[in-house]
Amino acid sequence: MSASRKGYDLTILSAVILIPTVLIAIFLGSIVKNDYLSKYHLISLVTDYLIGFFFLNIGLELRWELTSGVLLDRKLLSISMFSALSGMVTPAALFLAATYIAGISHKGWGITMATDLPLVLVLLSTFRKKSIRGFVLALATFDDIGSVIVLSLLYHQKISYPHLIYFFLVLGLFLLLLRYRPNFLVGIALFVAALYFGHRAGFQASLIGVLFGVLAGSIKGNQEQVGSLLRKTMEPFSAFVVVPLFIFISLDRNFHFHLRLLTSGLLVSLVLARLIGKPLGIFFGTLIAKRILRVDLPFNLRDLLLVGTLATLGLSVSMLFAVKDFSGPSQSLAILAILFTIPIGIFISSLAKVAAGKSTT
Image (cartoon, rainbow, N blue to C red; front, side, top):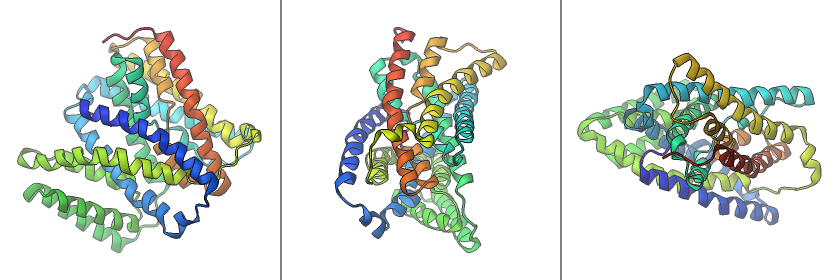
């Protein structure tokens, strides 16, 4: 999701901020009742509306990557697209198989698919693996697109046609604004209105955010300054406000840690599907695409294994799936599985880094 060097640094810093956010949220959730979140509709406000700014940033970055970034290389684009698809389908399929064997609900398979780029970039910076950075960025971009599509298809509501009309009217005004009278503040106001009417119409904030981001990022000429200003503003706002707030609210609950959780069918299925399915899907998906397209990769197979293990790191989007898929104790268990997977994924990635050896710059 990050394109420029400045964006790259912001993404790393945002991941570092998430660590104390997670710890503070878990600590407060263990000593303070969180009824006030529901009482003041904070959960709905963040998960149904504010999270749209996170996906607006994704849309802006997607357009930038396609026109000026790593996705300008169309062969890399094709391989990363196929690899991302395989890296999403494989863990989801393993999760469905595991839950079938365990005899539990199939809900939650979307949790296993998404990759959290800020966490990945932190490890990439630590590992100094420049040779795979472009491919990881491209892979994560399509991972984001896939997550948006799945979120929009799975959690759509009954269509409200009056609100749908209002949504398209706002979208039309947004396009006219970009073309004839670019204005940053008016653009943001129209986006907020689109989130409201789109949600009422039955659309997910993820789809609305990406749609407006791609459209704003596609303008040319003098109007391009609005898209550029949006991208420069949305990146820090998303990284330092929206995502930490979403993580805090998602984790602000009473967790009851005990050893029996380690044998829970849901927790085991989520952890194994991500830790096994994600690397396998990316590894073999990339090899198949490479063979079909007959192109050489800018890194070796051991580096590709590292890419797969890095992709096991998922937090914000995975958490969004957990919040929407589950409620009560099952939701807490799914979130615990996400948190439990991260340190294991970091450990496995470190082993893969050792196996891959020194980076080529």
